[in-house]
Length: 267
Image 1 (spheres, rainbow, N blue to C red):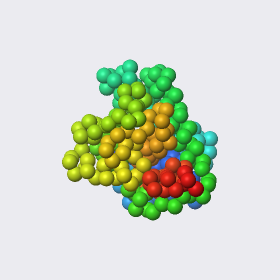
Image 2 (cartoon, one colour):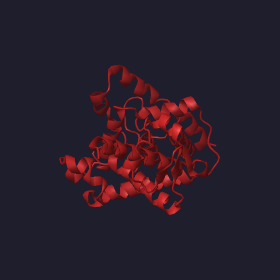
Image 3 (cartoon, rainbow, N blue to C red):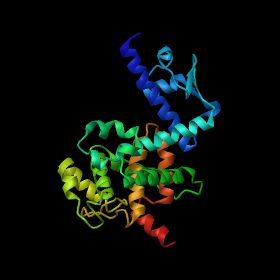
Image 4 (spheres, rainbow, N blue to C red):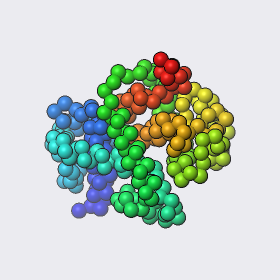
């Protein structure tokens, strides 16, 4: 059995499972829990039928022309929560093991004990907040697709690395509201990227303002922290439809645009 084929099948299987869980979380599972193989090939670049003998998943099965998703709602619910928690854990750096790359990259995803009590509370808090967003059925606040994509694209790499460091330093109480974070930004962005970020900070409800001053921490303006942190989690989703729906739901509770936030707070 080819090692290369096994490795490719593992990556392909993980990707498809993540897409399925993202669709489940966003409430847009396909009709009859069925995905067309041709469409999945176009979307992922993987020919799942050719890899069927190397794939073993309890979330889906592969036929000649389609992929059939498990109808076990309990399984989908449990797996989706594990997936969400895993994405959040990836963003948190256990302070006790900051010099241990094994813990930082891998071990923390499988063992809660590497996180401090405060870190575990933060993971649980953000998981619960995301599920409140997922379950939201209220009428959506209006936002243009251009503005929705604009807020989503705030997390493009290498900015995602900056955001992760800021969130962790907020969690470790190394920085607090009012502190200037230009030191973080200057290290990873070009001059033009910095100008763009600071300009966007006057339009979108970033975690920092147009002068690079932090607008939130664990005790102040927590809605801004929640909104921006969860947007980084949604950014890591693979499925574009799931991303769009969850971003709309996130905007429904925490407006992305400063002008809209002011309007809803004074409505």
